[in-house]
Image 1 (tube, rainbow, N blue to C red):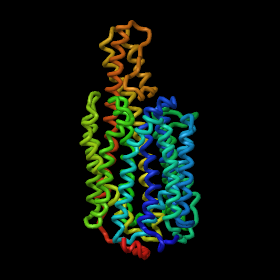
Image 2 (cartoon, rainbow, N blue to C red):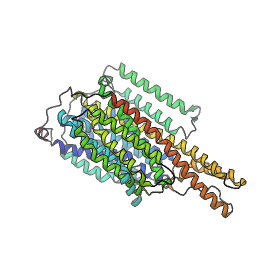
Image 3 (cartoon, one colour):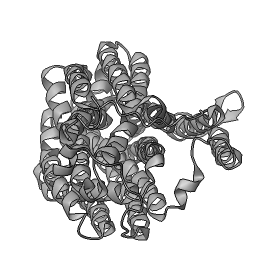
Image 4 (tube, rainbow, N blue to C red):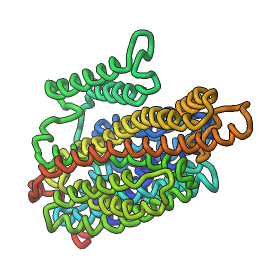
Length: 537
């Protein structure tokens, strides 16, 4: 099927189903973290790696995979990614330990990296600039809906079938997406013959891996030595140096660099890319402290925790298409700025409200504000960022744009993970020290030490009851200590979650500043002549 025979909306529907599956997997794991901690007998850092490694292998190859679409055809690369992603999803579900799960998630991320750049490239090909807003609205609605729906669907699957089913669910969806893509998506051939920047791929991959490894594992190694005399900060520093070397190489590479720096001369593209990075950081990072708080402190089941976020999901999905249409009529940067600010304020209200005895449903107004913000971000951000990109650079530009969002997600997962670990240890230890004063003097030190050890293990997150720090003591003292321990853990986890949620808020404010730099411009480049079906759409 060629572009002139294809119905652009049917083709977009097939592409969006695959895109939905990708984004679903960036958040669906979060709701299962307490269950995974228990059933996989893993620590918090290991389970966070299940999230981070997917985002890492998703983000790193995307500039390269966008070139594959330009050379071999976006449909063929999209289908290859669908097959890899679907097979890796089955492997994830069959994993019997956290190490195997991390490996399977890494392969799953590669499949996602093959698919994602092709979606935006197809939108710029199938829809003329004047009609691209509604298409971006549909794309943005899918992005926002999938990103927030993950916790609800994940909660139902974890409660009724087990954590493995958050991955098994991708298999039938993937098979349907493959069939739809074969039948509905045109075999468009851009016929751009690209060389592949192997040095650039190696430098960028190693840089991001070193930075993420150092940041996320810093707390685990107490910010000291990792292997021999090599320290965490030396690993992070090596990553930064490799990143600088990558940028220099892109500047001096006169053939065909992985990251053409000239694309950043487009003001909207540069600002939009930075904005997308902040969005990825915040939307990935916000769920980890929120899920641990509402499940381990407030005692909600995974299903109820997902249900709590359902109104946010619903509102974001409803708002996004309308915002996509509106972005063709008004300056889209104000919609993006409003969305970012609304999401930041919503997180701030949640952080302010959070207490060990809060009613879970009291958070719904703040979550609705977050959903409104998310619904206002994706469509105008994508439209303004990609709207003035030259068609011959569409594949590369979409790869850079999508990579920036995923890089933000990788950094958000790592930074939020390490900050949460540090805050959990310090907050629970502090609460335990205060609670110990209520016990007889001879039991105070063992009590505080037991609580601190339990906090360091992170294995207690799966239960709202808290640890039992003092075995073998008189029953009356044990009962008192158990109650104090539970209160200390709940208060410590609450404080840790509240502090951790301040980080994505701050990053979103940076996104507001970045979005303010964008300006409303009419597309300078004519899209390829659409098919008659596209013109009539």
